[in-house]
Amino acid sequence: MLTLTPVERSALRAEAHGLKPVVMIGESGLTESVMKEIAASIDAHGLIKVRVFGDDREARVAMYEQICEELDCAPIQHIGKLLVLYRPKKEVVKERSSKAGKGMREVTIVKASASGTKKPSVTKVMIKGNERVTAGGNIKRAKPRQASTKKNALNK
Image (cartoon, rainbow, N blue to C red):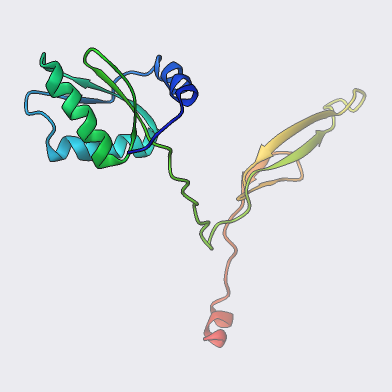
């Protein structure tokens, strides 16, 4: 079971105040599917509230302790039928695919006025990696480059 200092617990309690319960434990009690759902929620959010439908306080305390032991999470708060649980989120590093192109970039577009006597309009625009700016200042999606069938046959 994860242990926290009283200051950390107090900060997490304050953070959990605005949360709504994500998992409900019903008549069946703490089943395997409920435990899987709690584990998935705590992995996704880190700090969650669980509502227990049942009037037996001892059963709720037992469930609270069992959840904390099995999922290795810290008990934050138990008020009435609400249980607050915390486990630090695991950092997941996303791998960029080798096919990924350029990301977003900022481009300045300068368009001359229609009459030619006024100042040109200058706009800064974010464009995606697969877009280009035409000579007229419009944004178009870049077309895939045409590959020569003869060159492809020679390379193989």
